[in-house]
Image (cartoon, rainbow, N blue to C red; front, side, top):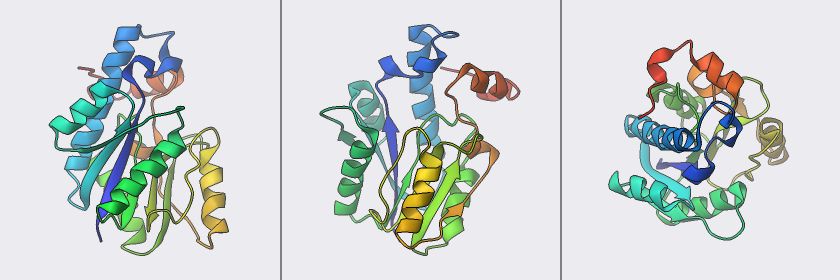
Length: 204
């Protein structure tokens, strides 16, 4: 089975806007670049991932990806994460992807074994795996086999939405919870929590 990872990336100038109270605009741009670099590094350590694809409207993010021999899709039109993911999925399918892992970049504790936990949850079977955030509201990773089996529903309340989409498709979704997948970085509270892991807070 050929598995592709799709990594959506906001423009670095808009990165982590909810952290504006504690970081300067330049620091938030640097954080966005660091998170993308780290996510691509982690995915490169997972042999089960055949290809990684970055979808973004930010030319700098796309350039960073291409330097790492990562496929890219340029987002255009009105910003819409789910539409961008659908387009990226079609590209991956056209290159032979049998399954898709959608992985946002804002997971500073992510490790290769977290990604492998998701892939092992289905063990090659058709279906859906969801990794919720620590509040059980958002979706921090979504595995779909085959691609397009369920719709993308990222945004506020996406965890429950993806559960519903899977069940409507006649599937029993599997849930994976790990520290690396549950702790995202969106708010000052998230940042405060992550300071308990100081080695992960070095932003290049």
